[in-house]
Image 1 (cartoon, rainbow, N blue to C red):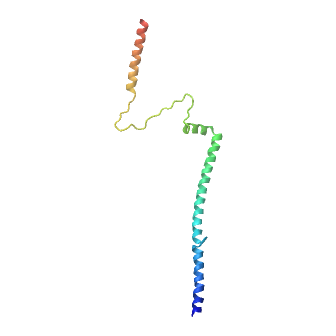
Image 2 (cartoon, rainbow, N blue to C red; image 1 turned 180 degrees about the vertical axis):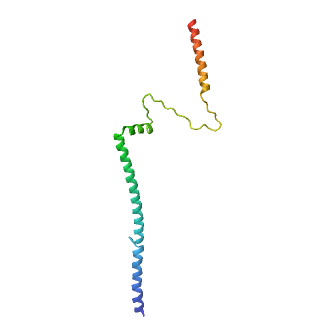
Image 3 (cartoon, helix red, strand yellow; image 1 turned 90 degrees about the vertical axis):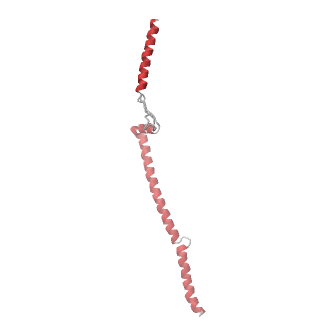
Length: 127
């Protein structure tokens, strides 16, 4: 009786242990699946880096050869301007409740101030 149970259960238990080692053991099927997932992620990351590298290479080539591109980068990134150029910065939206001065009042005040200054100059010349 003992021999019969040993001949049945011993090979069965060996098969079960081998099966468990194949699936759950070190370098088993579960590890294979995780490694395949990791490999796929690394390949995708590598492809993104290759695209980024190509873009950077094209930028370097343009910076070496293309004067219009160099000017564009200097203006955009470095804020440089050409000689005799003036930069005018405009506010996008005034704050709620604020009025926007059109500058006409300031111009009128400056014009009247200039007239007063001219009159003072004439009086000084007369004396």
